[in-house]
Image 1 (spheres, protein in one colour):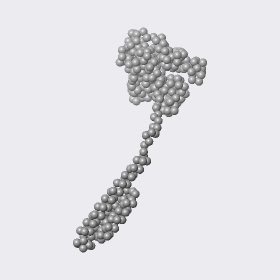
Image 2 (cartoon, rainbow, N blue to C red):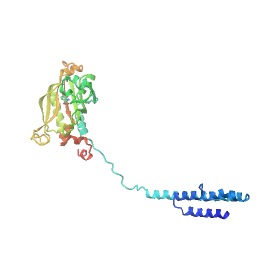
Image 3 (cartoon, rainbow, N blue to C red):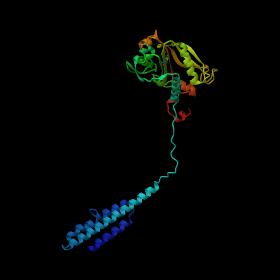
Image 4 (cartoon, rainbow, N blue to C red):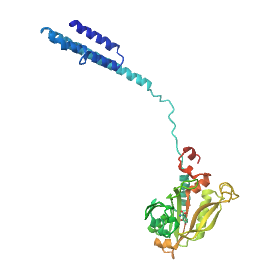
Length: 339
Ligand code: DAH
């Protein structure tokens, strides 16, 4: 019996020594010390031994078990250490390697135009006003002298949330909001996102941007409007830019006009950008309608003012020579980095 135990001990030791993986060690452990392991079977067979031999054999088996266990855990430690060493070698970080390039974005053309316009008007003493994109129909239409049967109020043009709440279709409602809250003199511009129920094509998008301007004071006249817009056009589009007014109609201004600028690409001769016209339509404007002033508790006998509003996309496209509006919203950096 003693020999057998000795033999088990020796073969186990040899197996452990030659093992190269944790899995092999585990197999060895099961083979000798598991429930049906060789050493365990010796213990179980002790019943057939004479009584005086049992304690001797029992103690030998226990010693052999301790020995094997000790060898197993020693080898396990060795294998783990080796594995770790190998990992450290293969996963070594080369700190002298150049790092990944950090890609910087660029200011979006729309944001560039908005920033430019803000800067020009701040220079003229204007303040920047901001207001809600989800707007009461009262501000978007009624206070701006736009009656319920006006075509702009049709659901084909305007997104309605309820009968009385819309996605603002213009930045003009900020005129009314500011006039209600501030006493004249008022000089503001309001850049922002507006929404119209248009389908997407090269010149339309249901979401786009406008900038509104409003000046209210005593003795404000059409010549102030014209001078302001001329200065703005020159600063924004180039010193040679000329401006012209065409009569137009807006519910919230009287008289109303549309302002064109001389084509800043061809200087007015006619080219692809101005479609041979020599002029590019820039914005809508006019003298604030007395009804609008009254709706906002400003006395039209004392105060007058002008307002204007324009689409940012239109200016960005003309200024940067972009011929499809959709490019502005695709967020393709190859496109955006050109400006
Ligand atoms: N809100 C107008 C539009 O979306 C543009 C406009 C025209 C704004 C005349 C004005 C204005 O302030 O006086 O077409």
